[in-house]
Length: 150
Length: 426
Ligand SMILES: [Zn+2]
Ligand SMILES: [Zn+2]
Image (cartoon, rainbow over all chains, first blue to last red; front, side):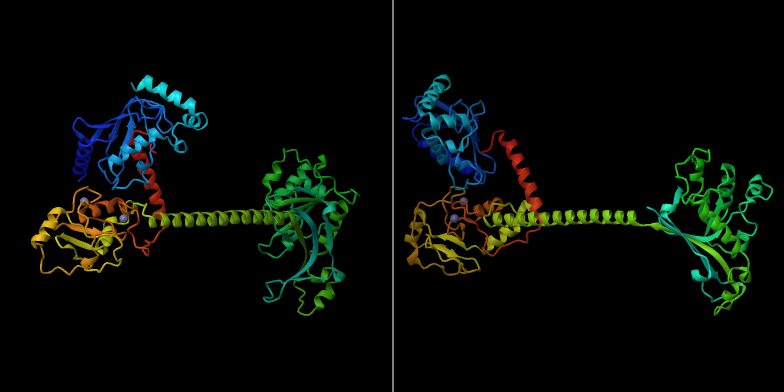
């Protein structure tokens, strides 16, 4: 059932992809998606291209997918390392519902790039900067995009 | 623990060779002898192996070898007719020995003699000393020149009393050693009711041991035991309280549907099946949903429960609805049906096919029967709105064992989730 649903979701997204999001399968494995996300316009990440990896557990949709940034990113909710682990509400085990869709997850990531959630941060320093020195944060984020996401 | 007093009295002791029922009687001091030595007038030379209880016994002077030098030395100090072992009833009565401390060698001989009998204490005195107190126990006069070995070889206690006390005892021992007619006031004693001239009239010594320290010890131990008991009680209470909180926490999480009951040994499949069976079951068909479950839905629909795909509509239009004869009539009047043609099962994302079995949860969300059964294996919540499927009155008996198992399972799950994700979980 999982594979069928994933295939259907994959078909839906690849047929009419949301703007700035592109998905492909990793080695034809429906449980491993490569996501390419453009930095949303109006955000410090605009102009950057971010590669993400989406892993769907065998128990999907009863268990939440796991999403991580392969492209390094300067963001309060993504670990600023090669792992690029991220914290996003919809994927938390206590809020994940089997009816949640991958599309919703990807859109939530886009939202997160537009508007970070510093209160739920993985990088406390970046969150502090975001809260207290917005221009400085945006400058650093843009620098990081130039360095890593071009 | 110390000696409070050494008391010597005269006992009238039945001669069991003649009488049987007569009781031992302590004679009144006015017609006999009585002596009390308080702790200030005595020295403890060796505590022996005393058990801390009062010591008592017939007073006597141990025999020395008549050919020995010490026997000769003692002749002037110990009257010839003092109470000897031979003057006492022939039985295993406990004894208290009395002797002059002549010199180390003779004391050793006296001690050796006393060891041969059930002697419980030995009273020594320095002859010819007019002091009302014996020399201090640490005084060199009490040195037996064997590095104190004698204190270990003699199980009985050894005391020193003043010379006058010892001399007086020695004199009384010589007075109370013969038969009744020979002892002081013997004729009065023999005339006492029940008296018999063949009874023994002998000195008897009590050594009263002070229990104060022992009592303090008991008090101390009682306090410790009390503290221990209260600690144990408090700990037990706290534990019970914690367990109670844990149980109610588990109960609440269960009520919210966050707990994987099957992992706790509660057969979820059976629970799930129980609930699934209680959920309204419908067959999807052209005309709408027909409840084929035996139970009548408890919850009246609050949301649309009948969905028709386009094909279904066609079927309805052609009147080719699938209708087995056994089917019960729809529980929901057709007039309330809110037809929504584009509805899919939120779990598998597939449309509801005609003739497929669907189930409706109490929250009115509908799924393929197979899909929701699968979902209920891992969560008792509705996959769409996260409302618990469990009836409000469902409370499995929550035991401490269940709490432990649940905690262990959660830990296990957390660690396996970490390894599986190889990433920081949110
Ligand atoms: Zn389904
Ligand atoms: Zn629901």
